Amino acid sequence: MISVDKKIIEKYKLPLKDAFDYIGKKKPVSKRKQWTSNQRDKWMLREPNCPICKEAWSESNIMTKEHIHPIVLGGQDRDDNHVPLCQKCNLARNSVMVAVLGSSNILAIRNRMPALKGSIEEFVVWCHASINGDEYAMGETKHLTESFLQFRKLKIPFQAFFQRNRSRYTRIKLKPQLFRGVGCSQRIWSREQQLERKRAKEKVKHRFSVAILIVNNH
Image (tube, rainbow, N blue to C red; front, top):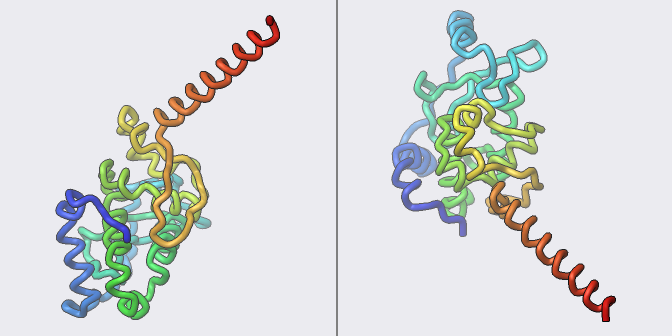
């Protein structure tokens, strides 16, 4: 069973409550509204590029209104839950939801409760952390970022955040690997761990070479 750090659960208890209240039919679905041309123009002034991949808005990769907390999981269609993302990043986030929860259909999700509880906690936390730059929470849900990275075909995800936090980036640096199924956590080595493994291999190789040299000299 998937288990998210209790400190993270406590930190994100409000959006998690929204999600489970909606899944449990304790609150109604939020009605979707399209951005007006005026709202879209204002967002373009604030964000000339996609905040995740840093690509400029274009006809082939348009700006879209993304809900930080998905409406299908109890999110609201209001300004504090909006972020402009390019269409490619938006679709990749949707693909992560399907990969983790098995569906983006609320009826299918409800039918799989309570088995999906841990996966929903993990995904809702990632949805918020991947936008607000919560380093600790992203470190705990890094396999979801791996999934996003594959769907989006990016080498370095969330460039804007990590460029501002370069000194702390190595703690949760990601190495591209295949996403291995629904809610399946992968072991992703940090930069320091990779260097440690490399040093260990070099030591073994050196000892082996010394041993051969000793044998050849006798």
